[in-house]
Length: 244
Image (tube, rainbow, N blue to C red; front, side, top):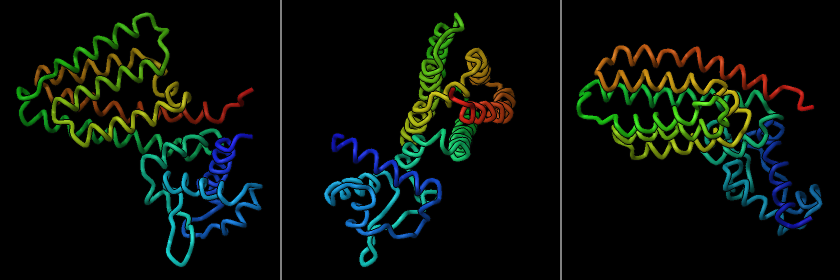
């Protein structure tokens, strides 16, 4: 087995122990020698594994204590949650909860953008977002488009919309969240079960923006609540389905 493969395997093994609660937040990992013996690797490989775990936010080094498990719920970052998606089928509850959090975060961005537009609709140009929607309409026209392609199209509308009202750090966060969602086929299949639904929804949002009918926009955003519930139900069903 190649060294990089050993590092990947052991890193995944320990990360899963943390994600599943077998190793609890605040708990110290065994010594490097003990980890080497436990996983059948040499101490230098253990150092590489610990480096991967630190980079992904699962552990941290504490002076006088050693390597300690972090509370990934409180302190996990984008890289932590992207890594957790590797365990989507083994930890479906965690995956569904993570996707729920991402969808709720996206909803906050939608609400913030609508509030900003409502203050002065004429100050923000919806044309780039309308063009992105046009491309999505063409893409989904025959009804056989892969969910991954729909996801890219929706992200482009969202990027264009957010950039119109001021992108900055928010746009970077949206890009990161979009990339996270794209890494699990089951997530994309659950979110984009009906591509035409997304085309219709964005059409309503953009029309309310272009006409200045922000009340209609708020009503359209409210539809997300039920849609998210349904998408998460589909996701759970896909993650817990028998792969055979």
